[in-house]
Amino acid sequence: MKPTERKKQLVTQGRVYRAEAVLAKDAVRTGLQPESLTRSALAQVAIFAISAFRNRSDGAPAGMNASTLLPLVMSGASAISKTKSLKPVLRSALIAGAIAGIVTLLAKRQQATPTDEIDRTG
Image (cartoon, rainbow, N blue to C red):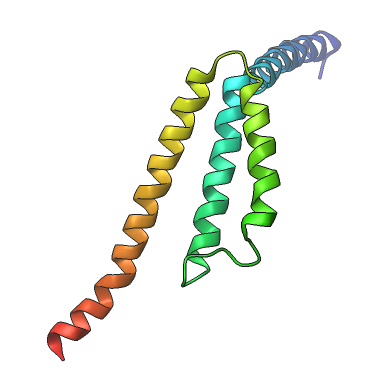
């Protein structure tokens, strides 16, 4: 490869690298917004709740009771109350709760369906 061709290739690679760095910087800046962090935290809580309730037949998460959950709930409520606007947080919580409820309902229906069919045929 000639030096001029190599130089053009390096200049092009440098442009691509700088463009990717700018895109990554924007993605990090967007991801660190309070709304984005709240949405991510609520999604993680919903996933944890769904997995905890799915693993127990009586509905109580394994190893969890009021004395262990209360500090977590209070610290979460404190963090939410420190945000500037509660409207996005409440909206995200409502959406996450609705999604968790729908997923739980669908999971219970799916578990109930095979036993109902056996009862009808037997």
